[in-house]
Length: 173
Image (tube, rainbow, N blue to C red; front, side, top):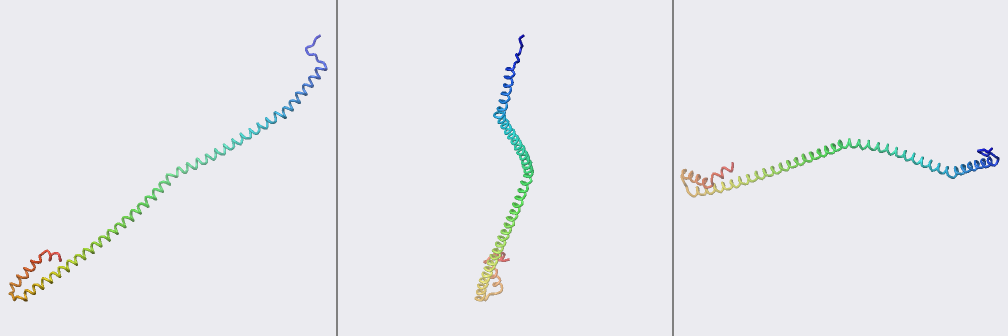
């Protein structure tokens, strides 16, 4: 009878040796090939975990910065309004100072003009007085030189006053 498997001692021996060889090769392959691959995969796994952790931290930090910037953007309008209000107040103060200075300067100019006008009036009045004195002395000389009647004296006085002119007398007032 022929057997499908010829199980004899040699076959069993070869099978056991083959199993031992495969087991030894498996252990050697595991030590030389699988362990480095496992270490590589573990390092890669750790690197990915670190990258994920770093990305998560950066995401949280970015969210924090975003909220800070949004707060600043909300407050920037208020800050701009504050700055503009301050600038307006300074401009108004500057405008008021300039107007006050201009009014003071205008007041000084008006005072100087009034003083000059008063001095000019006084000068004209003095000149009129001198002229009246000259006319009076000239008239007195004429009256003394000629003894005239009262009518003639009045007529000479009227002629002298007409010679001076009414405008001179009116400006004196």
